[in-house]
Image (cartoon, rainbow over all chains, first blue to last red):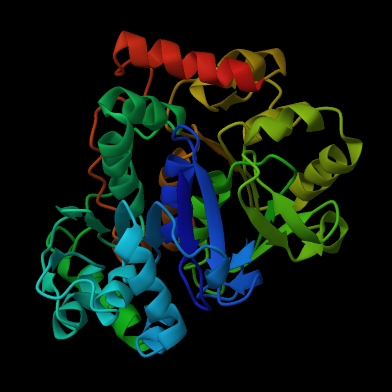
Length: 210
Length: 210
């Protein structure tokens, strides 16, 4: 099973490394990080590079597509090389998935027209403008399209997908293997739960990055 | 604030990318991925490379040390270059931290002698043999030493550390920024919670990798 993760400048590392950590443990999985050109790709904050082992063209028909988010998505909404790769890969994929603002790229490619999908809480409006039907859920499954909410939601999305692909027991074994028994120190991971001052500050940070 | 993450062959990517995603958002944080030599370092499953921007020697006295785990730790328990770097960096660090089996390296360096610490559930025995006092908790703080449990626990560890460094409100803003409002599809992330068959299978996978 070939799982392709397209990288691009200013992607968010956890968006893809969370799901990679889960999906790489599926039977006969081969996760392939790809990009416009092979080589190192720099994250949103400039502090880390992941290596793309191959180009988009080298992996035209993966079984699973997983598009990470990041502020770099905004620069790709009209990037025909990326959008055409997504359209073609989606035609033959078994699963087409995204984390965080990765769904903006799926929407820009026309894959989410009228489809229920999620994204980071700060990008719901833009997702709707691009033709999708935004919903505030952690993981949204619509046929073969699975979208996850912001950044850390990729782990939940990937475990949900793992259960669809390999069954509950296999997915549970992966969850135990990565000891995913979360104990967040605060209960403020969504705007509805966060104190007002925290939500305002977080929104200001999001807006400043746009 | 300089945050050093030492990489080595067969590290586990989520162990360090989870905390990186949190700690990179702290005020004036600079996260530096380092290794014996600069360049790409390959993860445990061979499917991903992260780039070390500098050598261990280039970053001798970081403010924060964060040691990720991975099966490659077993090859480093007698690696004097890594252990001496850890000892020297720990002498001057503000915080010395680990995720998963990263604590085995801290223990091998003599930093955890008689100190309460945690690790992946599959490595508790080895952590004790190396001189630490293993405890089954998600995050353990002992003075300036903070250890986290397996793989995904790095996110909880880093948010806890972020609150220590920058205060609760700042840490909450980071938690909201990465939308860390976990909804695991199963409640099986620790051996005590997992069905018996799942725990047995997960333990067999851990043992086969040793």
